[in-house]
Length: 72
Image (cartoon, rainbow, N blue to C red; front, side, top):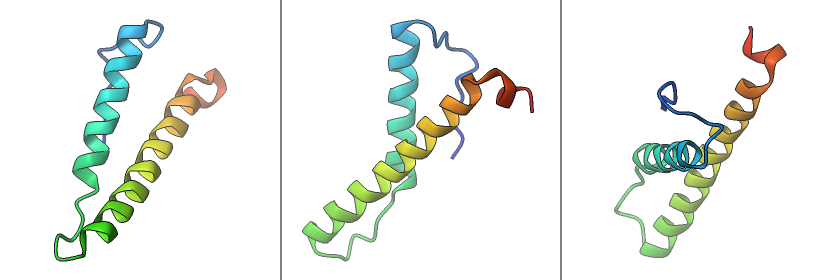
């Protein structure tokens, strides 16, 4: 999923919190799990998916903040 942050000032705490919220919301939407599974399996799968999605987003943000990589 794509999470836009062009309108945010990531140097501010408010901007960072807004981006974190957007990332978490996108991860929740992306991690649509099969509801026919037992509840415990659903919880585990959702937690794994969410962590993977958020981790990937954090990596992308860190890369975007690196001037040499951002110019690519």
